[in-house]
Length: 426
Image (cartoon, rainbow, N blue to C red):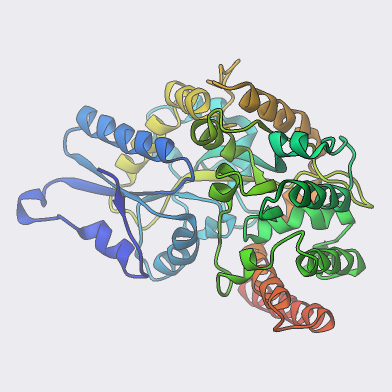
């Protein structure tokens, strides 16, 4: 059974729940996992049971939660020496807490060969040893727009061209919504990461001379355009305004329900979409939106990592070795349409629909459209804090709490404070 948690202290509670005197001799490892694909979540729970069965004396306490809870609670837990033994993460700033599993693995060299250069993405310079094995990249991701092809056809509007500008995609989506009566022309997840692909395409610089630099003139133009789209209804303000602070919000269900013309998300949604949408309407992904700097797909990824706080490093290493094995990684890649960090030869993605096949082809074609500056930013200390401030300030702008000029100023002030905090930690 998949367990859920909420509240700052819940992870600790989940970690110790059920540890009666009768279980005291059992080595319990808490595995925290999150994903938008519930089938994938359930399979990871089953794999945890399979490992238990093959390893008497080890119990995997599988805990599943939403992304926002994990992103907010996990850093707090680890900072005070609590939290899980293993977790799926997207925040590379947790690197100081990683366990180097290389000394505990049964065949570290084979594991390193299978996962290749992707292991380097987990290591932060000056934080992790250059040969450490801290876990593995569970997925490689790209952000691209999904479009409801049926709505475009009904409106008599051609799909945006491969080199369409961000503004042209939004404007076309607005025309389709007007013609079909659909509620939401364009939307994206309430996420600093989702926001940033367009910013890089506009030419924004996030890091300059080794420090965060935001917002520059290109970023201001992008922010102003997003604001104008919320004002004319192309990008409904309720999406970002309905949640407070820096809270993450996924808009996938709105797309599944046919309420969205264009939805900026990522390849991790292909499998949920093919399962949930079925033949309700035709859909696909389109190329990365273009701006003055180019047509950029924002890269990202998720990782399964072990933490130093564990009491059982050898069991953690063996479990990660099992999850990261070629057999399991191939199954995950093929069944849940995941671009793994493991170098799986010729994965046979189980794409049941032509829509999903077409979407995955677009994602694979766009792997070349990733700016190196975005990859560098993803691994920079303080990057997660910057994402959170972007979400919070954009939300305040969109709901009318800040003007454009005030937004630029408070973002600059936020970034200055982040730079100060990073400098103190060095």
